[in-house]
Length: 114
Length: 116
Image: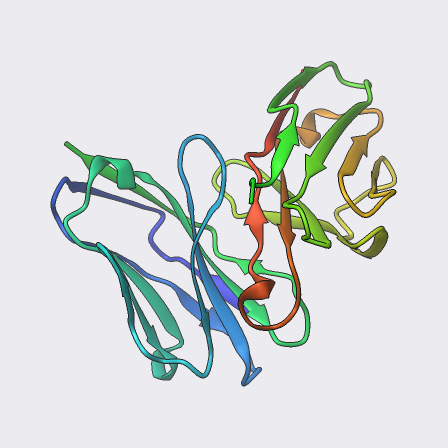
């Protein structure tokens, strides 16, 4: 069965702290794709990153970085020097090669306090 | 590209009434999805169109729900005889293709439905 687990329901940190959001996935497929989306209070899901299963290189985009480890089936997301505007719910999602439906985690609500 | 747009953004209705939502995907995106999201949960897949063809429907989509995409551009989602359990955010997403990063779905702002 395919599944995405985001064990952290809510995280609260003070501005400028670094924070890591965990994502653990389950699939038997060898080819799959992982995504992170951000959902601010306005409600729109904003695409952040897509990673395929053959590319284990970590990625950095400004203050955002992603650590993909197939050995632990994890695709964790780190925000460095967090800002209040980073406050949102963050979703991790999985897609298998066999279809285009996304399997979603339950999301992690991130609160950045000034 | 302009993003995915949805209308209305908010809808309040009384139980038993019919409601219709509209989604305009990103131009040239021929794949379109509808999702439902309740508080504290990730999106739940409802249905998927490739051009005007509805290729997949979730079991969540009861007979009271119907979706169309008549010309392969905008789509509508209708809920008949609404129930309080239908209260949720209804999200639309589109994607361009199948190869490489073209599979990425881009989402609209959603329509928040409240059934009284």
